Structures are given as C-alpha cells and as structure tokens.
Image (cartoon, rainbow, N blue to C red; front, side, top):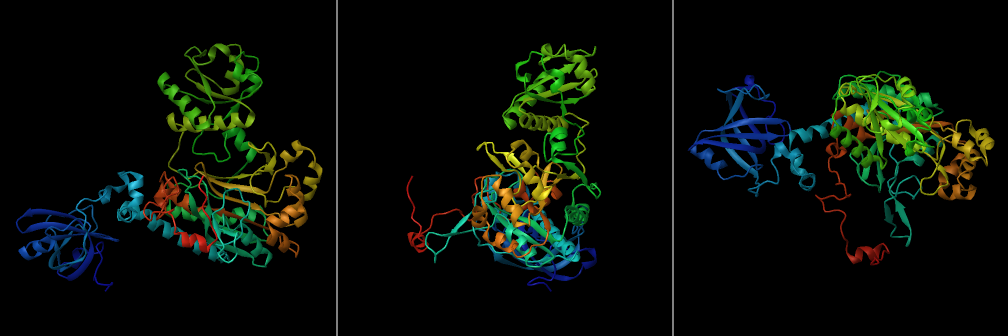
Length: 589
C-alpha cells in the first residue's frame, strides 16, 4: 500500500488482471465514445493507466471535469482488447467502481498542453512551472538530476571525501562576479553576502586539518544569463584535497566523472581517462578557444607570415588566423550568412577565399592573395574545392574570432562534427596574469587564489617586467566537455608570503590582502598544508548528460533570462516596515 493507492499508474501489468486496485493521479485526457462509454487516461509520477467508463454512474463522476483534475479510481484490472505496445501498461485497463475527485482543476483552458509544454513560450512555461513539470519529458531531467547527484555523493564518499556544508551568509569577497547582498538587521549599514562559491571556506577546512572535503554547493552570482549559465544561483560539486598535487585532483575527478557520463549520458562514447591535457596557449593557437569542442576535427592555423605585404589592409601589421575545409560546395548566400554570424558573435569581420578546380584562389579577398597563393596552399594544404575563412587583428582577437569560425564551419559543413560523444579534455597552464580589457592594468587572469608555477622565485624574477609577469603560468586547470567549461580548479597559494607578493603585482599590498581575505590570510600564518581542488558545475553537467541546449531545462525552478522568478513573482517590492527593520532607504533615481 502506498498512501491512498494500492498501485501507481506505471506498474500494473497483464499479470494483475482480476485484481481490485486503487490508483490516483491527474486526468490527462478523457475521450467519450458513447452515452455512457469513455476512456480516461490517468497520469501520476510513474506513468499512465487507461480507465474505461462503462456505466452511467461512472460517467457522471467524470462528466464536466477539466483536464488535470486529480482523481482516485478504485476498480478492477482487466486485459485490454486493443493493446498499446508503446506503453508499459498498454496491455491492461481499469474498470472503475468508484471515482473520487481529490483536487479539482478549475480552469477550462490550460496555458499549454502538458505533454507538449516544451513547445510553449519559455516565460509561460516558467510562470506555470508546476504544470510544465507534469510533462514526463520535463520531469525526466529532474529525476536524472537527482540520480546523478546521488551518484556523485556515493562516488566521492567512497573515495574518502567528507561532505561538509559551509555558510550561506558570509562576507563579501572580490571573486570575479557581483555579490548578492543581505542587510544585517543588528548591524546597521553592514551587509552579509551570499557566497559566489565556498572557495575560502574549503581552503580553511584544509588548514583546519580536514583531508578531503566535498559538497553539492549552492553558489550565488549576480550575473547575466546565457544558454549554459543561469542567473542568480547554481550548484557545483565543490571539492578540495590537502597535501595534493594537480594530478591528484585531476585523476580523482576522472574516476568520478567518467562513470557518471557512461551511466547517465545521452551519448555512449566518452573520452577515456586520463583525459588529454592541452596547455592554454596551445588551445588558443590550435582551436581559438580555451574551451574547445574536440568533436570538431578542424584546427586554426596562423598565416600571418604568409599574407604580410599582400596589400589587404586588415591583414597588414596584424595577426591573421585561418580555418580551411575541403570539399566545400556551399553557395555564396551560405558564406554571407556565415560571415554575418561570425561578426554578430565576435564583433569582428571575417573574410574568405575558395580554391577552384584549377587550384587557383577565387572569390572573397582572393585578388589580394594571388602572390601569396603558393605559400597559402602549402601552409593550409589547399586543394581544388577547399574553402578558407580568415580573421585578422590583435592576437587575442584574431584567435577568438578564428575559434568561432572553427566551431561554425565544423558544425555547418558536413563531415567535420562527430556529435555523438563526450569529448573531454583538461586545459592547463593558464596565465597567472593578463592585461584588463577595461582597466588596461595587470589583473589576475583566472583565480587569485592559485599558486604561480615557480612559486615565489617566478614572481621575484618577473617583478617590474610586464612581459615576464604575463608569461607566468598558474597551477590552474579547467575541465572542458564538448566545448563547455565544466569544472575549474587550481593548486592553491597556501603561503601568505607568496600570496602577498602575487597581489602586489596587481597593485594590492599586504594590508589589502588582510582586509579582503582576513580569515584565510590569518589561517595560513598558522601553518597551512599544500592543497588543491576543483568544482564541476552540477547544472551544466546535467545539461550535457541530457543533451539539452538550455541549462534552464535541468533546473527545477529556474529564473528567466532577466533573473526573474515568474512563478513566485521575484524579485518583488517589500513593505516599508521591512526596509526600516534592516535600515534600508530607497532613493529614486
């Protein structure tokens, strides 16, 4: 017996024929075929069961009820005359003796058809998310999410990691995104912040003597939405290991994630461990991205030397990158669409040439490249039917634009995209510093808590020399799956002297470090162990496993692209008394 039912709507079989049962669920559909004859489909979490109305009394019980009304049906199981092989319960039906309305749907018109809710407008789906989740196709993503999280917990626990929860109300910390602030009622003018990640707490746990930590951690960042990133909050498999190297962390995550992809993934092929290691600079040169989709077999090539002096203005004095494909048969309209899409995505223009049947460059900017043709042919291994798309500019811009070209060509030109797999790699050796695009000043590139490769000596050798500082690599690494950054981590900077020196390079002194990271700095002065960790994103992991294109499809109650919860009406105004309690005054712009 389960609650008020004997069976759920997904478990009755032909072997149950003759049994008296009670099932409960939502009335998915009713089809009247006579005065006192109708078919009712009852749906619950587990599946659907057909109920056959054959009497005037039972017809009165369902007459006039709206779809999605919840019912309790007591009756007898019998074999169906017209079986449905597509349904697990398709060989049986229930003949009711009693039908009771448990929860009446008072709406004649639903905002969308439940089983086709994914075709509805996204904001409508999010407003009526409780209905959207009744769709078995939508619900299945959430069920899989639960299964994967349970599997992650099991695998981490088996490896000796302790699941430890860390605070939600904490101090504001400069970690790369905007904080969500919470006013402190008992401390006027002061605020808590919701954690962007448990970064400092997990490092403090290592300093406190815990050897292996993990949690399925909620993280809060006030940042804009993307298809692979939800605004507001997200979850990650946060983990850290004391007395650990980079390889310790990478091998641990490989042992945990490969079985998860193999067991729950949409695709049967998964990159075997150990995953390929690609240095950051190599990734940018070969793929134009630090998160390359390795399902695409194309690579970016540098043709700067080959085209200098050709007379084409955008190439002169700039870095020029190219992506070439063979057997190209697309029309000019297709090429124009490609170039327009590249410009929309990158803000930079691309150009092109083709190779005709005689091996000559033609179309696009070919008139400028005739003298370069032999060198380009050799460098790019061109042949009749080849197509070359190019990007020029400062090195970083040319690389990133070429990376977008590579992805678009790979997915749009047949034969270059092996989609049915999980192609996984580690991107390693990230630069410790970079020049800020807005500030024009030296900034941390990826994570200020990382240990620079070479430690203190590397910083001392580069002090005062921007080029040398930009050449320092950090012990940082990203996990990339099918072109998505799926985890980020580092060997941590656990030495307060090295930490202070690293921050001095970006214009922050010891007092700034103490002020911004007081607990961690203080703890490290009491003898901190070397430690390292990472944090795979749970939401993005589930998105990849299900093959969904939007991360909102795998979150139970997501916000929309404007960081609004349309179902709950958040964010919302609050009473003046609530503002007064926390010492907040609203000022009109």
